[in-house]
Amino acid sequence: MESTTTIQSHPEIKLQITLKEECKDQGVLSIESFAPIHYQYTLDRVIIHSLPSTLPATALLPLLASQFCQNSKLDIVHLQTPISLDFAHSAIRQGIFDKLTVDKFSHQILSCRRQTFWQNSLMWLPTTASIHTPLNYMFTGEKRHPVRPPVISGEVYRRYLPRLKSTFSLRTIDPGVDLTSFNRWMNLEQVAFFWDQAGSLEEHEVYLHELLQDPRVHPLIGCFDNEPFAYFEVYWCKEDRIAPFYDVQDYDRGWHVVIGESKHQSAGKLKAWFQSLMHYIFLDDPRTQRILGEPRLDHSRQIDFLKSQGYGHLKDIQLPHKQAALLRLERETFFDSHHL
Image 1 (cartoon, rainbow, N blue to C red):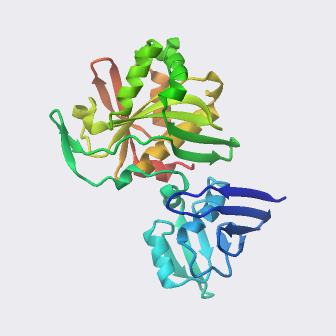
Image 2: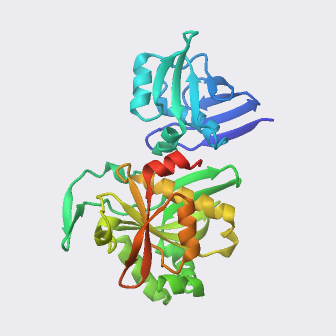
Image 3: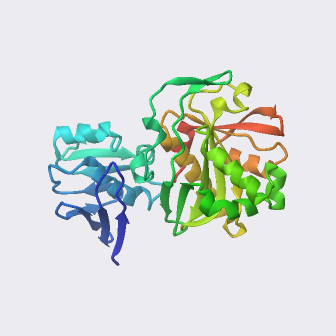
């Protein structure tokens, strides 16, 4: 059976790419301005007999995605194709492949590990990431921290989830579109208990407009198939009130969540949005090595879930508004242990 996947153009790829699986073990990579590229694949090897000399290495990302995204247990993909040394070195320096080898039949093999593929932002971030902000320091009160980029509008992350046959995306909250939902969610009894943010439409409109001017926090709407279901706040830890409680680093980040629509609270969707949110945070700035969580100490279900997802429990802390468990997820743990 024929299936077609279209990969939308990323600003840095500048190509429209269509991947067509013709049958069980072969397909066609159609790339704007290039002749169709036919390929075959086995368990962990993709074979292409000829590549255009001017093809950018980024155009091969959808091909890697077809392997890693459909098989979450696949640890490495080998691409067998005749290439120049310059092409191979460029592909490795761009973080698309890990190494070039030659097998016993003199075939050139470019290899990509699962961890490498999932740390390449080009497939998932449709806009400019925080990594492009140079390292300069400033003070907020007595806190010295890197200058943070301004909050960007629109969609910032999108990923298709084969197991759910659904697409998860993140976009910056837009008060003109999202205020009514935000207000309703924050006034839900369970949400109001943990967030202490119940209020009127007018109060929430002021809150969101102020938040969007604060580069310390990125307020986001989470969607399944473009339907809003959750609100997230992703923040830089060094400027936050949790900073004095541990050995905070310049690019540590934390997050808060509100699930506003109960129909999206299944165990499968919980794991999907959680792993996607962590994925986005780590991709947005590769200098981020740790993600922090600080749920209320009596929110035992959330604490147990975070531990099951690789978070370590550092300590219990007393914040002005709550007693909390301070937990931390390491970048290496996430990409080595999670099969996205």
